[in-house]
Image (cartoon, rainbow, N blue to C red; front, side, top):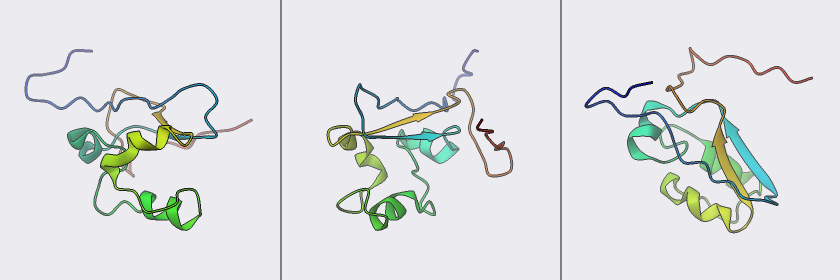
Length: 96
């Protein structure tokens, strides 16, 4: 797939390594996340606050800090690294 000049690729770097205790798997990067290069970066996204309130992280991290969570064992990846997701375009994932 060719990337048009001036367009932003909707791909974020995988944060994965062996023996992670938790991996968050998204569907695809949003336009805002792709622009900034951070997972769950839209200002209205509640992901970072929710994982803190659930006790997964010791504090409320900012989207730009996602890479620092690999050290305590939390990784990030997306199912699709080729296009931006929106609430209207996301499809359900069926689990066996």
